[in-house]
Length: 109
Image (cartoon, rainbow, N blue to C red; front, side, top):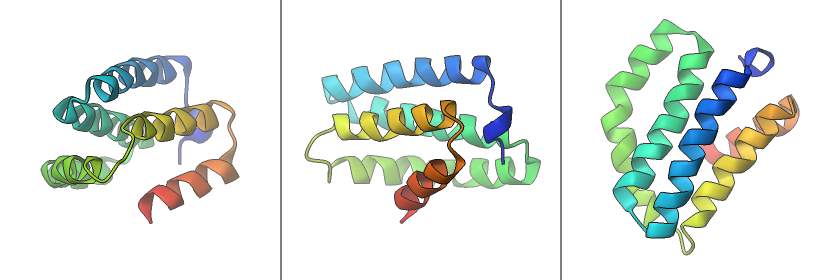
């Protein structure tokens, strides 16, 4: 929905989130990893500019946070979580719509 509209301010916010995510992964701080993960996805939803989507997100965010915490324990290398998000931001910056859709679809599956 928003790939072409992503601006420098959005990427700066994502970079700040990625910095925290990487540090949390390195500290093995599962709560902070989940918080950064939620912030990452919240920003994407905010940028979509779909009020109904934001309402759905806010309704589910507690469950999503719990899901992120549960899934982290399955990771053999926590920095893989950072790497996945870094790749998404880099793909968004490159405006590579096909690759972005592929990565997001893989993440959902």
